Image (tube, rainbow, N blue to C red; front, side, top):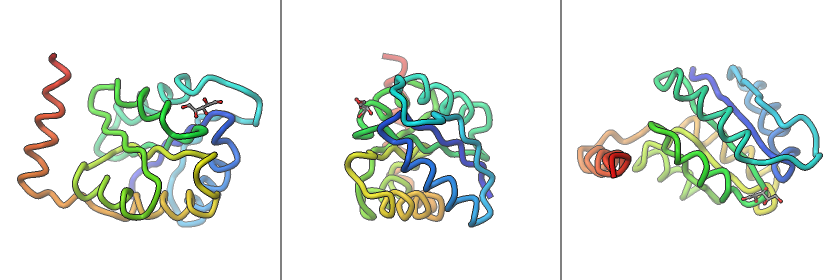
Length: 149
Ligand code: RB5
């Protein structure tokens, strides 16, 4: 079972708490990097903490990042080499993020989704495998090559 590294800013704090509780109840090892309260913080700080931990053990870890919209977290996370962060809003985008994009970080908006939906999408993300199909690997490889631009 993969290790889940999760972080949020104040806009995603309560959703993070709900996701952590649910994933631990399913038996996942969850590393919660904060934030620890609803006080205002800067989302890039938490994106960095999560992405560096996923980079350190990319085969055995995935990340979850929650801010108000999920936009800032996804923009920040995709600056990190080897991180494929996907901003997901529903079951379809979450499933595609794994099956087609092999996303290793799930981003969600705490002011966009209910806590119940965030919990459901986090579980779906963890349980959905990458399809491994050649065309998707090829496309992911092209995206990775942009790091050299
Ligand atoms: C914080 O107010 C908000 O800007 C942040 O949570 C996030 O939505 C940024 O993308």
